[in-house]
Image 1 (tube, rainbow, N blue to C red):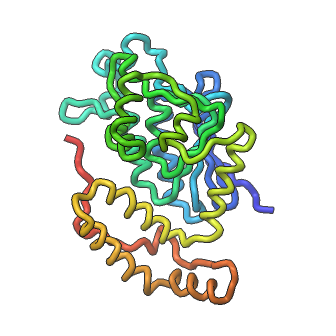
Image 2 (image 1 turned 90 degrees about the horizontal axis):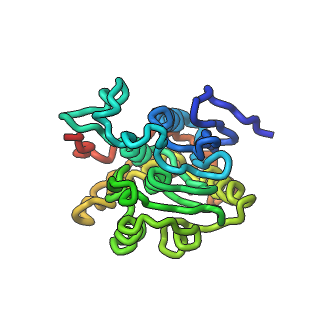
Amino acid sequence: MPQATTRPAFETLDYAVEDGVAVITLNRPDKLNAFNTTMMKELIAAFDDTDGDDDVRAVIITGAGRAFCAGADLSGGAQTFDYDARGGQDQAARQQDGVHRDGGGLVTLRIFDSLKPVISACNGAAVGVGVTMQLAMDIRLASSDARYGFVFARRGINPEAASSWFLPRLVGVQTALEWCYTGRIFPAQEAHERGLVRSVHAPDDLLPAARALAREIADNTAPVSVAVTRQLIWRMAGATHPMEAHKADSRAIQARGRSGDAREGVSSFLEKRLPNYPDRVSRDLPDIWPHWEAPKFS
């Protein structure tokens, strides 16, 4: 039996890796896992860890208790979103050119850069940043108890966490605008019907379903190929012409075609056995983006 490996304790997260699957659990159940600065920092650190660990083949994100994440922690009262009024070192550190960078956006940008596939297992309420952080995850599963809400206009603010980029790409402009204009809470079934989530499960079946999906990835695919595929799909979502994809995937096919993984992939198929891919993301990820530069915040 594989042994679970528990990582250094976080204040707002539980983080464990078992048999190649990392499970990150938002863990402030008494606050419905409300998002605060500590959770922002710890989520970024957790994804740094999953990227740096070759034993991690897939990542699952879920919530403790009855919520996934009820949005921003509103304990700051009316000044919750007034960064200038709140002040402090954390806010000062996020200021650039006179603008306070949105904490949810820092998280989704980090997830966007993940080298491992990310699966959301939304177990309950997911409101505000609780839903927008999931948009950067690759595959979203929901419990039948899940509820979603892009409630920003009802709080006098606007969508954040780069959701104006992610959300229309997932559900289309019309649905994105309806959900954000009204700010209403809607059930998992509507999220499924409109393409926000891949599937809806009975509460007790949610994590097993997410783990089964993670296992299908971990047991059958080459981790470097998955990392390359993730970059291709997400980065090309904003490309201006298919030629950009052709250039990148041509470089990738050339690099991967001569790899030990490609030889093992073909050999294991012909020999009708499970593959044992030798390449590792930490050392064998090909550079197929000679002109790629992440845009700077300005």
